[in-house]
Image (cartoon, rainbow, N blue to C red; front, side, top):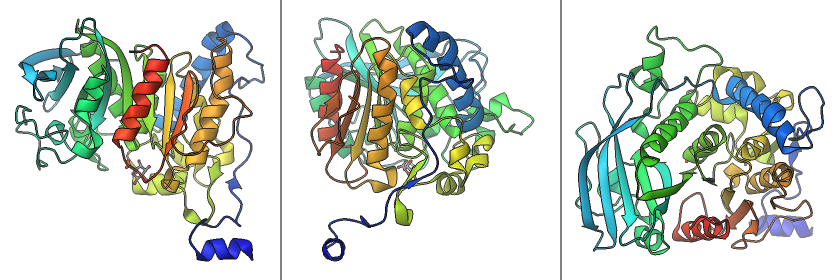
Length: 402
Ligand code: GTR
């Protein structure tokens, strides 16, 4: 009766219905051949390459090696942007040997008067660089069509707060790399690598292409003397992307994934009843271009997956990795994200680095937990808020990135 009352009041969802488990979650520290991984060396030489191979082949698809480092053509620099708080740098990214339809426009804000190279958040945006703020100096390339208004995404980018905390931010519209629609791959980055117009079952999906783009941005950032450690960051589908980028590219000093959910930080084998959380079936039906075709084999057969998403988080070890959720974002299964962060933690223990202790229970909102692996849940829905940025900055700072 009690549950019924709560249900009627809308306080708990279908709390009476248990979470659905599709088989047992694999142990990050047991290799495919059943070997127990007990040292950093065994992780680095046996388990990590094995997991990277499995995620590449079965989940995100294989990405090509870049023929060379990306190059940056500076278009504009201001020492006095955002009311004198920031240095603004804008330019076009190109990749020698990769004949793209247009270059990738990058925008960087760094706190002014920094005495040393500053840590920078690097992540892609949804609506274009001009959507971060009303800064009239942000250039809008002619290939941004349709153009969203300046400041359209400003609630997600508290630039002053980020700069005041001592961090810079670098960004690029994700459509630069590939527009987020099925079939678009032929006309963008992935098309350049498959001129015959066909993708193999283990070829890269859009998430892997976006992640590859993040690494090309890193080619550029690592050469900028004012830029210090780079934390790769992303929200939602771009949070999935940030994790895959972080797993593959050790140049990212930290990885931050916001509300990334299915195919991101949450455990795929864990499903909320009543269609409340996203499943492999739903995600691949709605977004058939995101993953490798091989991933479709596991629709309704999650128990057959050779990996689960805690192992993706673990591939960031020993670098700091932060998983952020939102309490009302059940679609992303916050508890599944928490569990994945916790189950990644034994890998960090190989370095004697603190993660989320096994006995840690799902924390309350606004109470970050963990060490080198961190988890945070905010009140509210699927979004990015100043509170989230506060949590990212605190996490980086606690892990010595400041
Ligand atoms: C949803 C999708 C999620 C998440 C989200 C987003 O429609 O089901 O996996 O990626 O979009 O990117 O905002």
